[in-house]
Amino acid sequence: MPDSKLMTLPEAVARFTWDGMQYASGAALPVGSDAIAFGRELLRQQRGDLHAIFHCNTQQLNLLAATGAVTRAECGFSGLEVFGFANGLRRAVESGRLALEDYSNLAMPLRLLGGALGWPFVPATVNIGSDIQNRSAFDPAHTPSRDKIPSVVDPFTGRTIGAFRPLTPDLAAIHVTLADALGNAIMLGTEWSRFELSRAAKKVVLIADAIVDTGCMRQFPNLVRIPDIIVEAVVHWPFAAWPQGSPGMYDIDEAHMTLMNQALATEAGTDAYVRDFVHGYRDVASYLDMIGRETCTRLSGTATGFLLDPFRQWLLPAEGTAA
Amino acid sequence: MSAQDYTRQEMMAIATGREIRDGELAIFGVGLAMLAGYFAQAHHAPRVRAMTEGGVYGATPVGGLPWGIECNRISTNATSFTSAIDALGCLVASGRCDVGIIGAAQVDRFGNVNTTAIWDGPIGDTYRPPKTRLTGAGGANDIACGAKRTLIMVAHEPKRFVDKVTYVSSPGYLEGGDARARYGFPGGGPTAIITTLGILRPHPRTREFVLDAWFAFSGVAEIKANTGWALEVSQDARVVPEPTDAELAALRRVDETGALRKKS
Image (cartoon, rainbow over all chains, first blue to last red; front, side):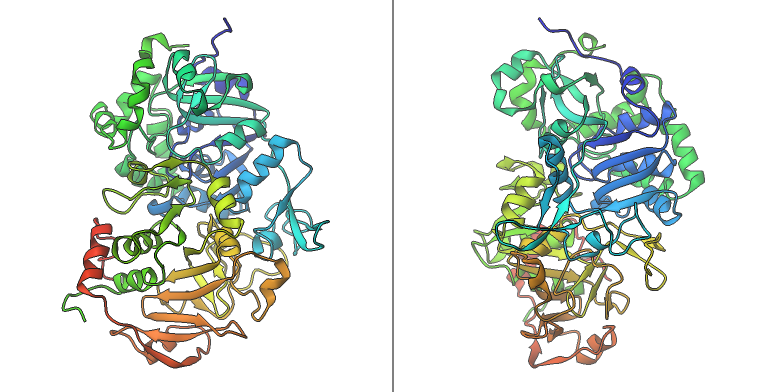
């Protein structure tokens, strides 16, 4: 029997992150599933000078940018969908504290796929001809940019296209709905780019809303898009995506989404947010107290709850999943 | 003609939805674009094959305007969840998608869209931090490159309708004429800019957007005054029919939380 990879969140952050690293979030678009709890722990352990690889901005990048922990970022989208502009990220970009390299929402997973496959480059038929190709925040002195999406010739047609640089982040902290102790994972809702990211990253840590018995994976092996053989550690952290939502588990906390984004719009607001919601808990129990137990119950009443039904019989009680 | 009151935003959404034909493979962005698309499905295009770039298929939003294109309001009744490479790549960048609806912070005379940032004047040769950072391209660049035709939905204000966007996030016809051909995009480019005042369409040769139609509550003078370039008026420009009662009812079923009914 292989060993359990269950680990506490502080231990995972201590073991797998460092200042200056290339850190990738595994999420489902801006307001969906994302291990925002992992970002809070990065701040608790005072990580800095991070190079963020986020397919899309989320409240995690918004927070890490607002506090200055991220100095370089690559994204396909930098807003918060219906919740508007990401004020913390926006402030960091406008002040010049953070260099944000723009791509599109297809470019990012293609670059991850290129990294996963070990390709030298990925042919680009999007982003070419626009200022995404022309302008580079990482190499601002050169317009048109020399090596962001350089032009290459398709050897078959002679047509000029672009070349995307593959991505191989140092670590991917991937939010999943269900994981077993070995590191097999099931995602409910769109996987977005978590499949490609899990293969592109040098190391993968899963942050799961719930832990299931491995029997669940044997029942639904087609749904296990991240297998244990590429996973270093599994963290059980309920409401890990809060205030964002996780299909099957909990809805978005609309009030906190707004409160958080408003706080991150100023330095003083960010300091207060960090004090109250980054240092405002000691463990999972006090984290859930911080969200509010009634809020947790309300958010868990999501209309998507039926998506979890086929898996409920394998859910393990929290006391069995402490690392 | 409708006896009901409706907002400019509702007219924009209905005019956009009218561009969607039954049976098409269509991709909708978050927010108002999604309401326009699902309005078409609820009204005249029941067999539209709708998707979002989130890789969520077969879904109809519940509970009002979705928070995002992946959120629980659109994950409640989906028939398939896949991925970004699937939705934006296999189904859009490949050239398979018939029509996409995108938004814009700024749009120019050739239908180029800026959603990245606003600078205080030209950027210059050295890329520099903007005055106001916006949301970036998201999937709109991929839709603008790959969808057979693109519809741009945008509030008609002078600051948004500029002669030349400072930053091209999503390509329209670039410098006009056949400029798009240099890149071999499978997509044909924007066929309409639908605004809170009317509809602009590209001239077949120059690809410059000209005024094609105004709404019952607007007119040529108001539209010209709100456009940052010398807007030409098409010879057969006309007024767009007002929303019918059936159209408004369908739109308001989709826009349950009234996002489009806020007077703007």
